[in-house]
Image (cartoon, rainbow, N blue to C red; front, side, top):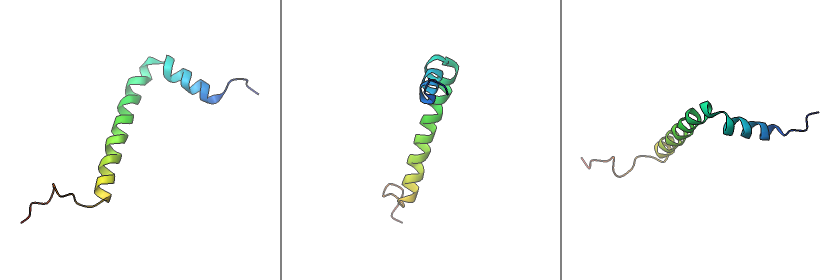
Length: 53
């Protein structure tokens, strides 16, 4: 059995391997924005979207 924690390996990989950090940051931002958009769609139409006609 390994004495190293798998989470520690993941943190090491993310901190040391600089080529994955930037794409990972973009992926996190994309997921947050899509989640925000889907949450707003699930909540129903907003007042700003209604034209009043």
